[in-house]
Image (cartoon, rainbow, N blue to C red; front, side, top):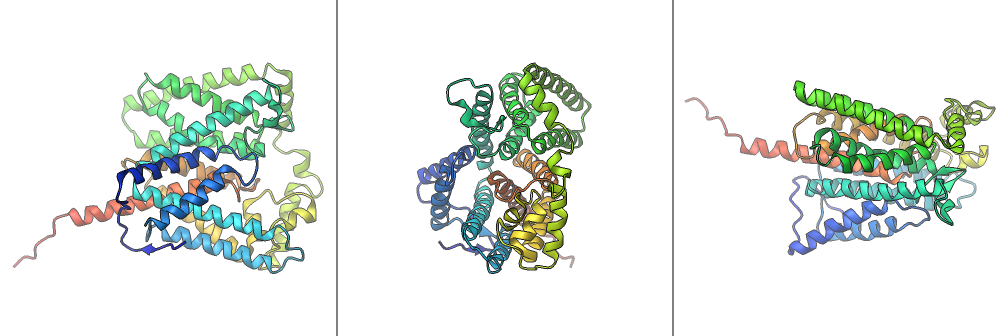
Length: 419
C-alpha cells in the first residue's frame, strides 16, 4: 500500500459519484461494527483493513496537517518493535505490535477521510450511536438474563455487550451518549424523546458495566459538555435552556438508575464496585504497587520489557496507559505517546469554540479523549479501537480548520501598495 504525504491537500474525487457514496457507506459500516468485538479478529478489523487499502489506493492522501499524527504513531510503534528485541519469549509479541500498527493506521485513515469531507462526521457519529445502542441493549438483556444464552453478553456478573471486557464496553458507550446529550441540549424539543430514549439505553449500559473508569468518564464528560456549551452559547435564553434540560436529564437518569437499584443483585454489586479503592488496587503487588514497580523497572530498560511481559511477571497487566507505553514501547514509545496526547488535546482545544460545521463533533471527541487521558492513569486504553477513532476525529477536524484558514487567506483581498 502506498501512502502519499501531500503538502497541499486536494479533495479525493473518484470518477464516479457512486464510488464515493459507497466508500462513505463502508466508513459508516466500519464504525458500526466497532461495537461488536466479542471475538478476534472481529468483523471491524477485516472490513477496516480492506477499505483502508482501497481508499489509499484510489488516491486518498495524507495532508501536511494529518502527517504529524502518522509520524507520531509510527515512532510509537517503532518503539514497540525495538521492545521485541529484548524479549526472551517472543510469542505473541509481533502480533500485538501488528495490531497496534493497524489501529494507528485506522486513526490516520479516519483523520484523512474526515478532512476529505466533513459531512462524514455525521455518518461516523450516527453509526457509532447505532452500534453502541445495540451492543448496550445486548449487555442490558444479558445482565438480566432476558433470554436463554444471554449470559454470553456478561462477564463476572457485569454487562459487556458484544465486547470481551466490561471495562472496554462501558467507555465505548460514552462518546455516543455525549453526542445524544448534545443533540438534546441543542436540538428541537420535538426530537428530544428519541434522543432521550437512546441516551437512557446507553447510560444504563454504562451503569451495568460496573466499570469505575466508565462511570468516572461519563460523569466527567457530561459535566464538561455542559460547561463548554455554556461557554460557547452566551445568550441568556440558551443558557436557561441548557440549565433546565440538564436538570431534567439528571432527574430522569437518577430515576432510571434508582429503578435498576431495586434489584438486589444490582445494588450489591454497585455498593461493592463504588468503593474508590478495591482490595486488588491497594493490596501487596496490587494495581498501585505494580505501577510503582513497573515505572522503576522501565527506568532501567530504555527499550522496554516487551508486549504483555509485565503481566506475565506480576499476574496482572499494567492498567495504566503511561506505564504501558513505557513497558511495551520503550522510552521512544512513551515520549511519542505523551507528545501525541498533548498535541491532540492542544490542537483540539484551540478550535473548540469556533463556529464551524464540524464543531459539535470536535467538541464531543475532544472531551471524550481528555476523559480517556484521565482514566488512562488507572486503566490501559492501548488497544481500544474507539480511542484511536477519537484521535482520528480530532486530527481530522484540525485538518479541516487548517484548510478553512487557507481558503480564507486566499479569498482575502490583497492590499495594494501606496504609490
